[in-house]
Image (cartoon, rainbow, N blue to C red; front, top):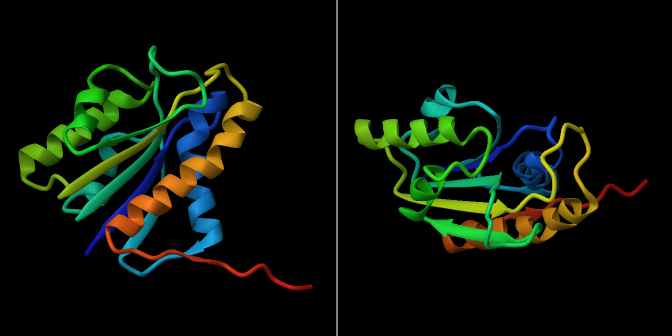
Length: 164
């Protein structure tokens, strides 16, 4: 079993950073089995090819633009829904992810399962802080990631807080 939780986004564009913050929260607050990797993919594209190749489950966390959903809405997309969404230009770096997914399909290394945990941004303006609305969405989105991991048989263990 090889699982990757990949947080993507630009931390310099307000809410575009949500995917990275979700992945960071997972890595900082939970102990995961060795076969589960958590990675900050930033705005990388084809350079993620090797990391994404041949996974049993690839879970992507990202900001997704949706005219149908209010800012802060969490959307879960699975398997074929994900590449289809990336072709609709849902995020500034989506072209890179779309290219990587296409390349993985071409090389036969497409993940067995693919899940996107997307959060609709309130702002994509230049700023290193997220809006309060999306800061509040990190925890529920993280809980969705944990539920998706459980579906794949992964039990994340919350790290104990150090007593001082």
